Structures are given as structure tokens and as C-alpha cells.
Amino acid sequence: MEEVKNIINSIKNREFKPIYFLMGEEPYYIDRIAEYLADKVLDEAERGFNLMTIYGRDTSIDDIVSNAKRFPMMAEHQVVIVKEAQSLSRTIEQLVKYVENPQPTTILVICYKYKKLDKRKKLYKAVRANGVLFESKKLYDNQVADWIRRFTKGKGYSISPKSAALLVDYLGNDLSKINNEMEKLFLVIEKQTEITPAHIEKHIGISKDFNNFELKKAIGEKDALKASRIVNYFSQNPKENPFLVTISLLNNFFVQLLLYHGMADHSPRSVAQKLGINPYFVGEYQSAARNYSMKEISAIISNLRELDMKGKGVGSQNVPHSDLLKELLAAIF
Image (cartoon, rainbow, N blue to C red; front, side, top):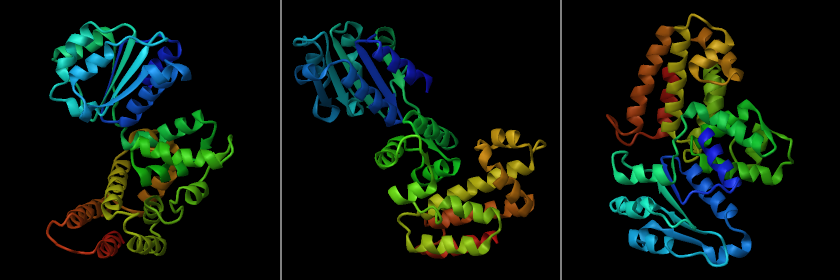
């Protein structure tokens, strides 16, 4: 994300702003920027007196302003970080007077997760004028694998497309969770190594053979035996393999296959761009499209949506997800 890079570079160059208002749905970047400020503005000796962390649920706007107006002790700056500031959403506009005239030796960092300021209000405009206003947006599912690749490269490793897809399948688009799991790998794998599904299975605990990614591939290849084995594994390990996640992934897969059938240009580059997938996986879609006609795909999508409703308890109560998984395969094959 270019905006994050610009903020990090300005901090690295000690071009500080008195206010950093970090808001939005993706907490990962909010936490990283706040941590970077805490680490780079002050050296280790200065932090004892000049780094303060406050939690929104335990404070008020008046307390935040009072702390922000203090002068640093034996340092150029003090850093005041307000975590979970979304707890102050009802009173956050009261911060506007301070933001309009901030203490120049204070760096006030507001971590306003899962919410956004109203662009029509004074506070939004005051932060834009006097500080940094950053909105951290959730990545779309089809962007996460590329994020993992860039993140891994930045740490001195590489990762295979299949491994990245496996992580996305298991962890979704929660960047903080992905970061935590990747850090486990970095502790035990030498740099310059390519991270493989075997590494992920051994050190994170995601099965490289029994997962939604492999189920999707088996179904695409019309390999009923392999698909049945994976579904049986899911039935025995329901907490690690939620039924609704599986249904959602397969629904997306068949919707993409429908789009594939409607494309005039089936070149790998065109397919990857149109479907929002890594070119590495285009062959799987080409193979699946040969195995399923548009009419079959439409019927499967209809059945998947019915099963999704059943899995949520609509129209059928207390049906075990293990039975729904078997019904899923029957609907497809």
C-alpha cells in the first residue's frame, strides 16, 4: 500500500506530524504504524518518560488532551498513543480544539479501529490540515495472496502460489492473523527459502492434503474419490474446517467458472485478470471448465446456495454439517 509506505518513509526521515489519526476496517496497518512511531520517534532511554499508551475505554477526551499538552522530559518529543479509540466515538469530535492547535512537541496517535470519521465534521478537516489522516481498508480476498507474497519477500523469503492460496483459504483476509502465523515460519525457516505447503503443515498446522484448496481442485478435476476423502476429514474435524467457509469458497469457484465460460479470450493472462486469480492457477480453471458445462455449473450454484441456507439453519434445523458435506458432493457429482 503506497500510502503506508509514504507514512513510514516520512517517519524514518523524522518528518513527524503532531497528529496521526489511524482509522478503518483493517487493524493490521493501524497497529504497525503506531508501533513504528513508538519505536522510531524515541530512543530506548527516552521512552520511559515520554511514551504513554492510553486505552479509549479507560479515558476521556479531556484526559487525552491533558496528557498531549505535557512537555517531553529530556527529549525532543513525547508520544501519546490512544489505543481502541473507537470506544470514544460519541465524544471524539471534542478533540477538534486540540487538533486545530496541537502541542508541537507531542506526537498524538489515535488508533480508531473499525470506524471512520465523518468527512463533513470539523475533526476530519482539522486532522487533514494539521496531521496525518489514514484510512486502513480491508483487502479483497483476491488481493490477499499477493499481499502475502510481498510481505514474505520483504522478510527475505519467497512463497509458492499454492502456499499463499493455502494460507488465504485457512486464514481469510485477516492480515494480523496471517502476520502472526507467518512469524512462526520465519522463526524456524532459514532466509532465502521458499515457503511450501509442507512448511505450512508442519509449523502452522494446516493440512496440505485436506483443505478447501485441495477440495476445490479435486472437484474441478471430477476426482470423486479424493473429494470424498477430504470431506470425510472435514466431518471429523469440523472446527478446523467450517462448513459455511467451504460452501462459500466452492460457490465463488463455480461462479468464476461460469464467468470463464462466458469469456471470449481464454489466454492465461486474460483469464487471470478477469477472474482475479494468480496465473499459476489458470490451468485448474481450464480443466474444470472442460468437466462442467454452463448448465451443470448453474445447477451446482443453485444447490450450493440451498446448502448454504441449510447450514445456517434456514428450512432445516439441526442437520449435522457432516451430512450436509455429503449432500454437497452428491449435488456436484
